[in-house]
Image 1: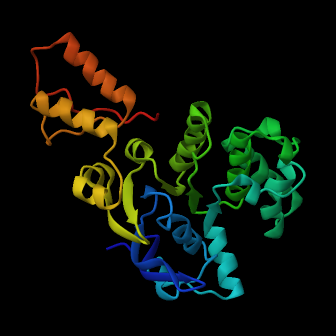
Image 2 (image 1 turned 180 degrees about the vertical axis):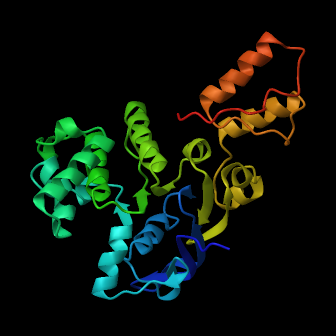
Amino acid sequence: MTEPLLATRGLEYRYPGGIVALHDLDLTIERGRKLAVLGSNGSGKTTLLLHLNGTLRPARGEVLFDGRPAAYDHRAINAWRRRVGLVLQEPDDQLFAATVEQDVSFGPLNLGLSDLAARQRVDEALAALRIAHLASRATHALSFGQKKRAAIAGVLAMRPEILVLDEPTAGLDLHGVTHLLGALQQLHETGTTLVFSTHDVELAYSWADEVALFHDGTVLCQGETTTVLKDREMLQQARLRPPLLLELAQMLCEENGGGERQPLPRSRDALLAVLRRKLASPKDGGDECIDQPIIML
């Protein structure tokens, strides 16, 4: 059996004053997947993500790379952060150089790469996030959405195996979310493993391959997205509601005889397609939920 790319086992962390932030936390990150760490605000998601790139060290438990415990010496931490890139929720906490190009080039240059090799990485990262036209723009003059993408580009230029994002869509309008998710989807298709925290059940349902349901400093359960988000009792324990899209899809499929046997629509467009077919053939039933495509929001 192949070991997961990254995992935590029995993780515990306390902030000064004895405040328990994480406890008995198990998480598995498989290569090439999109994993949503889903939980309400204040549940400890950010603290968990800070453990995934070695920023915080657990009081108990361990982080495993390829089945082996991670080390915390200087050399090991540097190697760790080359494999796991962390993007913070607030881009201003991450951007510090005068221009976008200078900020994105900081990481590659500090790896000891030549100017030519660093330039290639910067160009690739800016193109991947669709902000090549902003290369010479002052970072303080960017919009919030542009800052988000510039911060991701800076991490991406390090070519991490795993990209960890803290509430990546927070503060973005629909246009910004669409552009950001489109860019992240392209990264995922090139082989980057994505882990993102969110309290948005609709985003998790439409976009994640797996969900780790998070509450009060621990993972309540982890599994395939639809399986986890159909568990009303577990969602209630995490103080979350089922995604509206999932509830509508279940009602529609059950009404037409599809029941739980067929894949459920995972996007607004896919659900609308089912509705259009139903309205076009109101007497036909039983196959409306078969082979519905997953289309990004």
